[in-house]
Image (cartoon, rainbow, N blue to C red; front, top):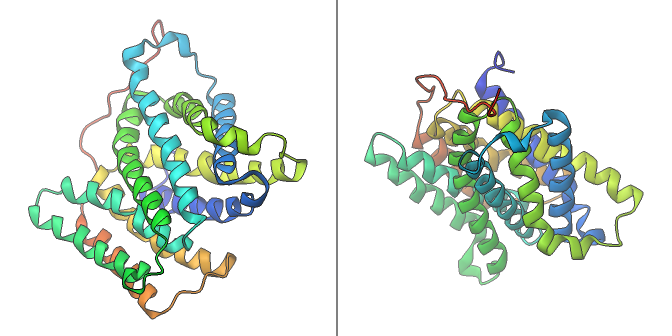
Length: 288
């Protein structure tokens, strides 16, 4: 995995995320939005634990604290994002959510002029949502904004965790925590409604998100700055808009297309540099 170009890992992760989101929408009528988030995270957590087989007892609480916090943010981010895509077109929800990593890229940029790019992206979001028409789904926008906060924190904490835990150990710690967070609201929705068909779709959705992308992002963030990673994520709103149109038949008008373009341009402009200097400091389990 370390020999694969970091940028290709990030782009592959984006494609997987949006395909997983599109597939997840099909589960909403059966087990609810929160139930879908819980099922997907639970299956993903099982996958990571089986792959990594972490020995939890060999890390102390100080070492486990970061991946636990990552799990909390990941669970909240997943819940908020799926609640957003249940109310908004996929491309719009992702464009709003992208304000999180874009802000990370702008704040961490060595030049303060980069702070203009979140404003450009915000202009694009206004074009996408058209609040002046009075038809904007406020709850969807608020959920997407919550996902934006979660995504920004996820990038920063994932890089920290990836530097300190070998392989996917950090994700094998954080994903069960994320599943537990989602269980508070998701398990009651899904309980009694998980059929073999729902389980099969859930497995596919969990492979697409979180198994593939969160693994790829972890490895990418070991070799990219958070700013560079946030810049690559600029492509995600465009990818989401294309997948939304192709798979979900969510047509976008000229103003929505302009909005996506503004968000993408803002992301690219926020930070164009990116490989990290120095070696990551990884934590080994106590006693080996």
